[in-house]
Image (tube, rainbow, N blue to C red; front, side, top):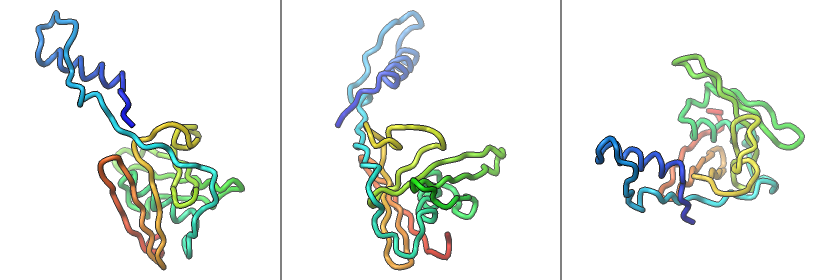
Length: 162
């Protein structure tokens, strides 16, 4: 599905105007391929988790957030899942000490996540997102796959790392 992002189009148009037109120009022609972003449909968020083997939900969520945020898994703290299956995670960025917090749950073989307390389309299972995250367990190996429209990023973790 192709969606035109109006704010992005305005920013791109403004940049084109600034880069190619005199200061008093008021409009610019922006190539259509610059305005189109393809997204993925959000997965269902209320399905029972797929088989997690020896991995607990907090292990899978911790690995997923480490992958998505490009962080070391050891620096991420995770709670046990609450009654609704939600795991809360946090880490502190070493460069400036800023703390980040997330919520995560498993739905089938999907990892559903968002910033803590945020009711995003990704968290609610509605609308479109830039990527979806899936997990696969094979013995003591966990694979986290970030599926984007045009690429996939995969990270593998051993149970002993989590």
